Image 1 (cartoon, rainbow, N blue to C red):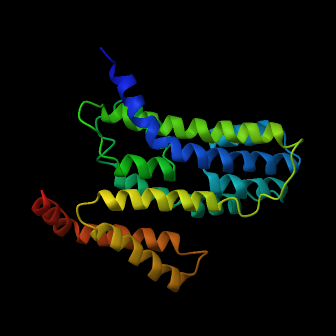
Image 2: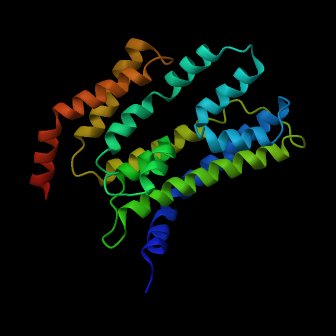
Length: 235
């Protein structure tokens, strides 16, 4: 009889294949960039393991080359990763009952793992905790291995990595469209799109992320009953 771990792994792996393509491409580029700036391959590898935040890791590279400014580094890091506060709130219910896996799920929750674990309808018979665990673990393995390979190849390959981060944007578009097509109602999607556009126009591209998350959280909370009612009517 197939173990629940293996069953969860088989269910999780196909969901992470698009992430694998994006993480390896961008992770290798990150590793190469770090190596061309004079860092050993150990730096991008260890930063990928401990920080595990793609955008923050790119910024951290320039911080390591700048003047020692711990307070500024703390504030910048918090601003870049503050969106995870809202991810955590959204996952409180889903992480219940996961036991010893919960600390790792919290630590390893990146944008892509959040998108998959939050939107995927886990098939009957597949353990929820192990499914989310393997999604998070596989995504971290992809990113860490990509950063390490890029760091090792950095001394041999030199090219301009500017613009490669668009891979992540394209991947999020695909994840959103897949979730949109599976939804029974699209209120939450329209709230997300509307809040993002309005906050982008008001706050600009450099500062709209956190206000957008606040707006989405508030609007979804206020619309919760209506969303649940429509889902019930569809059922």
